[in-house]
Image (cartoon, helix red, strand yellow):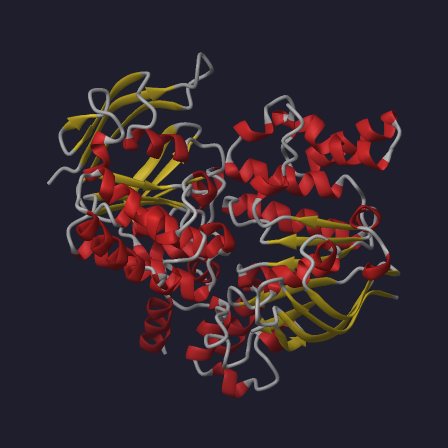
Length: 285
Length: 267
């Protein structure tokens, strides 16, 4: 079942002369985990905002084409209506925190209040996501008096609590410690297994390579490629497009294995390990 | 030369349990990364170094000056801190004004302040954005502007709080080069970061903080050769080091170059 259908989407911010998005067409299936990579200003964040209707309802500007998410054409629904099915975790958590709640616990419940969820269910959902994101111990703290990484988890928890069908995350782990990053990827993967569609902008290519089903590669507002991670990350023009080649692929390429395996190199630690053992034997010492 | 001396530093926010506990450290000019889990006290520590917070007990000497006796403004010639969130730092509505604010407050003439600011903006490749409103720029660009605003004051010690957030491949390369340049000029660069690959590529020393205490202080090789300790501190080895570890190689691999060399000499 298609969860996202974009056809011929072009968009220009007001007062800007250049297209932020140019003739984008793609589809995403229910329960897929899609990564978005590309250099800064290539349109990644704008695409996310088009998926939740902030483009064009909030930013206005010139809009052409069709964006349909969870069965709703974003043109025909308000941002509030779209928010019931589609959640966006902001790039900067400081901008997402409501500022109207005094505790982490109430901040998570804020969105649920606005959706008119019953009190017992609000409590249940709030407690579940606080535990899922490992911030339950912070529940009574002021949302603005926790660390940047903790705030980032709070921003994710607040969206997950709404149980959207599609979750869009714009660099959700940029301020997290390495294990916090791993936890977020695992948590997001659990949501995917529950059938939630995940779309994530992320510069941590090694992590995306390990978790994403497909990757959207963007440049200058256009989609350059949309394929499996092993194909996207093997492209020789990645550096030019402002995207790092995952270190495992770089390692295998420098051992000359890309020529031996033209069908694609592994992108995860585990698979890279297996290939090196296969090629060089078990004992390197 | 000793740039920073921290003696038995303890700090707590208004009567709460200590965020930093009895920390003693000394810094010369090797570029140093401070790593550790979220909430370990990293940002609090650098705010103390900058003099924005004052020790509850113990002392911090910045190029010999005790932060208890000098205001953060007075210390600006010695030490500059680039905030984690540029929105907490930026307040002017024109990029050039923002970057000139520091040098003007250091009593440089408008002409000198302008010159220093343009140089700083050039270092972060933002010289074509001088007339923009910082709030019209992307998060990554605003971070670069906030870096320029500190560099324009030419402090001897430069502290970055998570500089790679929101930066793409090109931005990270730019920041790495900047750190190398500052170090070459004899300045002390300290960075808080969660990007372990970035640590090995731009720093020679790493300090692990955990629950407000220094758990390990050593060269990058020492720190990253201890996977168990890293795991306990909610960290991990750089990706290439993880691969080397999994392959059970005889030495700790810190870079792609070391990895390649290992395999070309073995086989």
